[in-house]
Amino acid sequence: MSSLNTVVVISRDMVLTSIMDRILKDSYRVVDFSNMQSSLDYIYNSIPDMLIIDIGTDTDDFTVNIVNELKGDPIFGQLPVLAIFDDRFVIQDWDSLLVDDYLRKSCLEMELLTKVGLCMHRAERTIEVNPLTRLPGNIAIIKQIQKRLDAGDIFALAYADLDYFKPYNDRYGFSRGDEVLKMLGRLILNIVKGKQPHGSFVGHIGGDDFVFIMDSGYIEDASREILDNFNKIIPTFYDAEDRVRGFIESVDREGNKRTFPLIGISIGAVHNKIRKFSHYGEIAEVASEMKKYAKCTGGGCFRVDKRQHEFAH
Amino acid sequence: MDIQALRSQIEKIDTLPTIPSVLRKLLVVIENPGISLNEVGSFISNDPVLTSRVLKVVNSPVYGFPGRISSVSQALILLGLNVVKGMLLGVSVFEAMQKTMVGLWEHSLGCAITARIIAKKKDLKEPEEVSVAALLHDIGKVVLGLKFPDEYKKIMAEAETKDIFIFDAEKNYFGINHADAGAWIAQKWNFPYRLVEVIEYHHKPHLSKNVTMQTAIVHLSDILVRIKGFGFAGDNFVPAINNAAWQMLDLSEADLKDIIKEMEDSLSQAEDFLLSDE
Image (cartoon, rainbow over all chains, first blue to last red; front, side, top):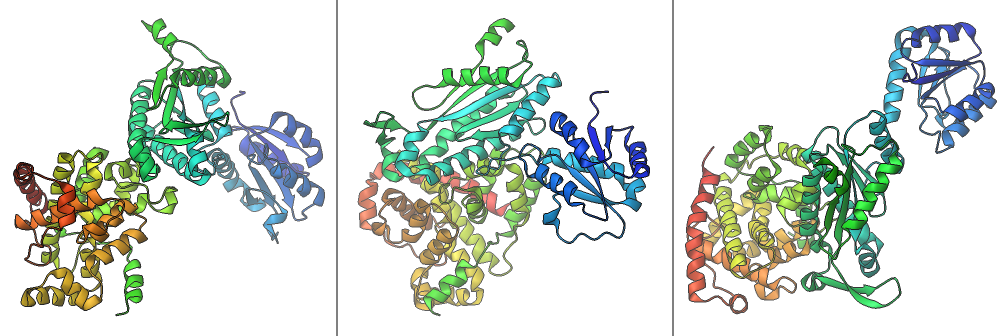
């Protein structure tokens, strides 16, 4: 039964607790605590999927403070919290109670199960995003990969990053660099979703590092299409004279003046059809290894983990 | 009217209507669930208003790279099929001046086709960009005709009775011509300067600074399409070829013959697209 999501219920009211237990017990693993203090050790150690707190009528300062601190912590901020209010309770200021939703006691029977389901679903949907591209960020990417590994899914994972991006930033400044990243995010998203509308995933790790996940049959085509289109579009992000010349002058890491080609993409891909991975770190490592092999002199490159292909034949 | 007031009125325009035959075909395109991005792209590339709509969205600050994209196919890949389809759902048609506009659509598409032919002849890196610029070069006429339909009818009548060019008649009435109006809206919609400049200087190609060759190509296309009698650009004259542009293009008589020959086939296809209903 470990696959059931865990709901922590905090209430001093034993009757209320037993009603909630009865409603939720078939769908969730319910853990009851009579007050906030006693629940903390459990919450910190096992991070439940949801918290239900009986606020009643008095917003008991101590309980509310702990809830607010919990929601303020980036690790627990995602944890959905549902407040239970007495029927006549009116909240003055939502800033003083950082919860995600509320339910009145008289509605428990009718609404609790549905409300809990929606709260969890919403928490899953509102993932953290990269502010630049609005694509899912690092935590969401790790979660996504691990979820697929845990479920035993067969999939392909690709890492993409840019070559000669630093000299571009040095030459034109960061805001021009951001334009390139936004374009690339859009390009990867549309090509991946266009090839495989369902079950694919695109994330932005940060900087010029992107990730996409597809069924392994699509990854090669999609990668090539990303490369081709990027190479077609990128010249328009250069000033006219640089575009005509086909290179820019900038300073390398040692501080020497030299010329650099236009930005290209390197994509490395891996799949778990033959080789098995159990942890996201392992599969991510192979993908980024492939990406390093893919690094080449301008124009962009794509590389799949060949060792698996050799196994396959 | 004061020119600043005119400009701010034109800049308030958010969307332009298309012609009825395109709208009818458009609905078929949108409702086809199996249609590919390429098919939608080549459809959009036939219509100046649909093209400008797509470029306006992809170059808007929302996507974060304004003023960069001048190609329809690139715009579509960056927007995605769903966004494009949703955007096309809102397209409307001209209520007034339909006949004039159909003629203008033919002229615009004819220029786009011709400009692509010349751009290839001149080995330009981006023939699609020149073709888009040619398709949009008279967008100012669409703008003026939409915003001031009654006035524009008078202007066209004046061009005819006084035997003057439409851009002179426009200038007499508004103090500006369609090239100015087109450049204003293209600038307002964050189109790349390479498009804005061609639109602004297609009648004065010697003034273009950054895209002289592209402007010269569109200038010549405009003239060749008029010579062919394809479509209707607002008046019945063929303006003289600008000398600087002609020098720059450096086309031999044989080149010109090739270009005109290639135009023949392509133009009849264009006519089919705009006038047929399937």
